[in-house]
Length: 119
Image (cartoon, rainbow, N blue to C red; front, side):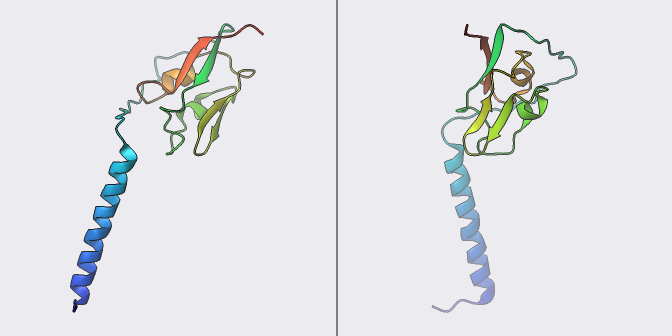
């Protein structure tokens, strides 16, 4: 089989592009998670002792990409990122202010506020 350099590179680039598209389609999966970045200008966080943030990593973008919205927004540093897993929330540091839930860009939210369990 004789191919010119030009044809070889053209076919290589075409096959590389097809591979990238195939991989990106596989990574998307069947779940379409729309990303909506909320407007934070009108939100004021109010600490509540009766609430605690809970992670729902099946929706979290941080496990596979560079979303750090809740980690950066948490004033008490109760949220930590674990690559490949998602986020972990330390309930001892969480004030229940809701800023992490508000700033989360996915729907359904990857962080929810729940009633704090009695110890």
